[in-house]
Length: 615
Image 1 (cartoon, rainbow, N blue to C red):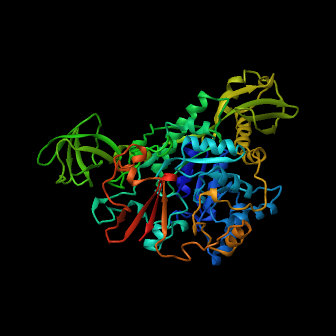
Image 2: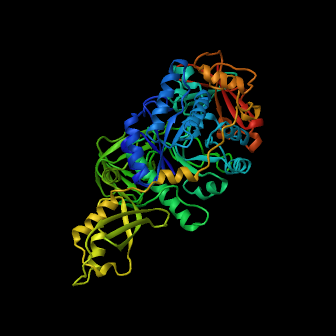
Image 3: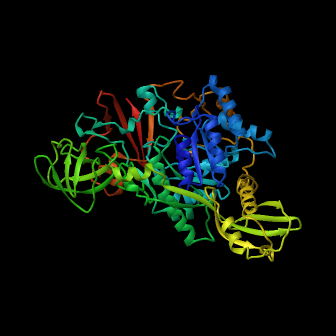
């Protein structure tokens, strides 16, 4: 399970709450520009994560300009030296550099190379191509169904596949959205997305007739696959990714805990099929609840094929959990019909008659009678309420809410000149040891209970003793508590070498020469994100027939700015191919921003895809 880390604090919280890995951005060249971190902070996160066998993946997944190539390469070398476990790459020039650099580190630590979801990997052929280029793992497009993931896995059984399981959804296939760049000069491929898809639009037909007025027609609900982890694992996904590198620590604590517990249930059910990728047991002080964390409403997206409820046309804001309906309103308060309990300071919201989300804060709660700081003018009996800020839950998460320990077995034994203590993982896979020189003296009173008592005091270490074995006769000698404490402290100051264990166990992708680019990789003209000479050279070797620079460098008129699996026509109930009503409008349809800018919709039904062009 791979968790997002906005910063060092969030990364540590993710590991502490059960993540097997975290992904984090460096101070440059990550696809979330607002979530950058120093190399020193990433180094500290590596040291913390590696204690548990957890891994740190660093995003270097923007396209890079020529004048940035040297700095990007220097950053990658720094990340290699501090021991990061994976690099997420989008730019093909940088990918080729990483594969070449790996040869310099032969026999030494070098991070895995992962192709970012920005590479738009939605076909088995594209996944195979990326693997042959040297990628150890491919992060799949969010839009894929269980059957599509399974097909990719069957055709690429040796490729690690990473699938998103939770969080915000981009309406366009990732890596090929140019709306933000076109409208605002902020490139999504360089970590500067302005969230064009969360804005309001009018929908009009070719004759200017308005079909929808000021709706969030491109805004999607958030993904939630917590009920489908087993299906995803069986389909071939080996890593489950949570979105949210801009989210705070409370979000990460809650979501990671919920999914970690569900993964543990799956492994307990099928221990011969699956195991966690890191070590440790987590004790929680709270019960995770995904409804209490930022969400726009949840969807399984395309997991089981096209679904009618993936969009959030009314609002791009967080709804939170449904808490009941307004029952009766007085001058300064109202009653809620439902079973939820409330606290002073809770944040509530509701949809008014104009399909707009209105929010307010509770000043005082007396049972189910709520006194807002100011009564909302549009609140009516029968209106459904959602809580998007739960004060009591936030207080719980603000405190220490989890403790992660590694279960170990200790063995105390006598040596010819003293005593030794061995610590091994509960599964027996690794062992550490300590020893002291101390003269053997026959004990005048039993030592067994004191040995157990002193050695069990693992205190604030990351280890949890599940059993202590005493070798034959070792408790017949006198041994002071101070010596036992010395043995214990020497032992617990050491750490198991999970990094070496992982490095020896995971086969690397072979370094092949650049393979020819094929049309079934699902790319369109000018969408190859070629922004530097190294990427241009790469695609030239890949025999790409038409090499065009990235849209950021060479804008064109009336560009294709988005490719979406989301279809407005289908969501409104007008897809005849799938049983919808026959449209009465004249196509092509257009969506119009509040400032009057227009964008033409193309329904490419042969691929079940909606394309958006700037007019």
